[in-house]
Length: 514
Image 1: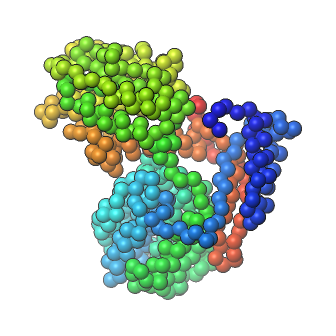
Image 2: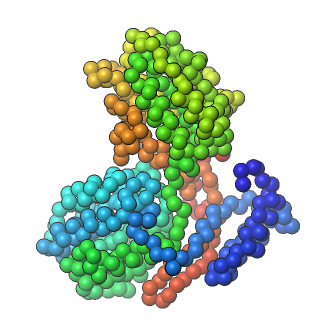
Image 3: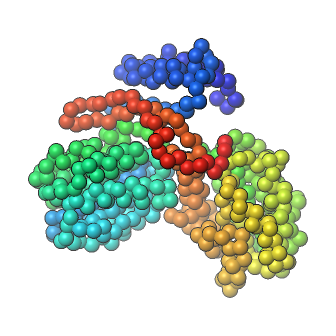
C-alpha cells in the first residue's frame, strides 16, 4: 500500500486477509487475532478507538530447518566460572567454534559475552565484533577464577537487561538469546528476583536457555524462570561437533524458527532526512564523498516517505549554488544518484567558509518548504581545510541553532592533513559538541573503517534509527498484540495470543513526530 488509505479500506483489507488465511494449522489463532483487531477498532467499518497495534505473525516451518548461518538474532553468552577448573580453556575454545557457526554482522547474528565468579569478571557488547575473529579474541581474553557465588546469576541477568540489551550497545530489538553455561551445583539466588529478571528479559524478546554442565546436580525446580533447560553432562562435553554441541545448536535454531520476530532494521527501512555539508576547497575529498553518498543511497529507499537527501558544497565564498540542492529536489533514486555523480570538481582554495555554509543550512535547507520533515535528520560535515575566511565563532548563532534542534543528529569527519587535524578538530567541536561524533580519518570511502567499522558511520546511523524506534519511544503503543509460540520441551507446545499493555511502562516523551 503505497498510497494513503482510509480507515475503511484498511479494515476491508484486514477482513480479506482473514478470509484468505489458508493454513489450517494456524487459522484459529490467526482469525482470533483479526477478530480482536476488528472488534476493538471499528464498528460497522468506522474507527472507534485510538488503540494501536503491533502484530507479529509467525508460521512454524518444521519442514524447512533453519541453519545457524541463516540466524539473524542477538546472542548473549553467559559463563559461570564455578567448578570449571582445568576445563576452562576447553569451554573458551568451544565458544570460539560456536561463534564461527553463525554469519556475524550488523544485519545477521551479533554475539556478546559476560562471565562471572563471585563478581562480574568482564564482558563485551553486541556492537563490538563484526566477525568471528574478533569474537575469538574477546573470548580468549577471559581468565579463570576459583571463586564463585551462585546467587550472582540474578544480578548478571539484570545487568544484561539494563546494560547489554540497549541500542547504545548494538541491541537491535529483534529476537534475542541469552545462553547461560554453568557447572554450578547450587542455585542459591533469590527466586522472586530471578522471576523479575527473567520477565524483564522476556519483555525484550529474549529466549533464556540454561545449559547445565553440573552432571544434573543442580535442582531443576529452581530453573523454572528459564524457557528451557539443557543438561549436557560436564564441561568436557563442549567439543565442536559433539552431541552436546548439536543439542545447543538445535535448541537455538528451533527456537529461532518457532518464535520469530521481525528481522533487524537495515538501511532499506530507514525513514530519515540526510544533509551532507561538504568542503570542496582542498580538492581532495569530493570524489570520496560522492562515492560514499552514492553507496549510502543505493542501500536506501529514496522517496518523500522514505529517505530524502540534501547536499551543500561550500568553499571560500560559502555555499556553491550549482552544486547544492534541497531535500525535495530529487524524489527518486535515479535522479538523486545522477545529481550526486554530476557534481563537478572545484578549484583549490587556501581558505574555506564553513560559517556561511552553516547559515545557509539553517536558513534554506532546514525548511519545511524545501522538504524538511518532522523526522530524524542526519547532518554530516566533511571538512579538510582548517583555514576559515571568517572565524567560526562569528557564526555562533548558526551552530547553536543546530545544537538546539532535537531532531538533528550532527556528525563530522575531519579529513585535514595530520599537521592541521587538531586545529580543524577544535573548530568542528564548536559545531558538533559530542567528541565521539567528530571523527578524524584519512578516508571516507565506503570500505573505510570510519564508515563500515564497528564504530563507523553506517553503524551510527543504524543505532540512532533503533534508538528512535525503542518500544518506549515516540510510538507510545497502547496495546501490543503478539503471537507467542515457544515450545516447552517438557509439556509440549504452548501457543497463545497475549495482549500486552505497554501503558504500564515509563514511556518517554516523543522527540519527533511522524
